[in-house]
Length: 115
Length: 108
Image (cartoon, rainbow over all chains, first blue to last red; front, side, top):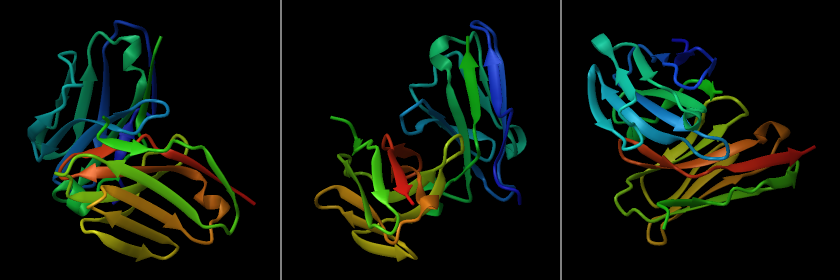
C-alpha cells in the first residue's frame, strides 16, 4: 500500500487542448473522489465513484469534463478543450467506505496550467 | 451565505504556543467534521475527524465541535515548526465541503 498515486504531477497545456489525468487509489478502497483546488481555496468536490459506478457529479463538472473508473480500480479525469479557468490542482482521494465516516486519503494532486 | 467560513489568516505564532483554528458552518445536514493539514504543493492529510459535539484529543491536537452553534475548532498544543502548513476544515457525509484554509506559520 503506497497511498493514492496521481499522474502526472504537473501538466502544462495550451488552451483548447485535451488533457487526461490518472489516479490509482489504495487497493482495498472502493470509493474514489475527484476534487479541484485553486490557489487560496479549499478543495471543491467534482465527482465520486463507488467501485465502477459514478454516483454523483458536481455542477462544477461541465460537459467538457468526464471521469471514468473502469473495473473499479484506477480512475481517469479528462478535460476537453481546456480553458484558462481550468488551471488548478486536481486532487484524487479514496476511502474504504463512506468518505466522511472513514476519512479520505488524498493523493498529491496533478497541477494543471493552461496557457 | 457560504456553507463554510474559515479565517484564511495568515497566522504566525512562536514555537511552543497554543494555536486555535476555527470554522463555522451553516448546513445542519453535515454529520462529520474533520481537519486536514496541507503542506505546500501536497495533498491534504487527515488530522482528525469526529461526528459528535464535544472534544476529541489526539496527542497535541484537540478537535472541538459545537453543533448547536455550528462551530468547530482545532487546538494545537506545544506548536512545532513542522506544524507550519495550511489547515482545512471539512464537513459532510459522503462528499466533503471544505473551508478556504488557514495558513499557519510557527516561528522557531
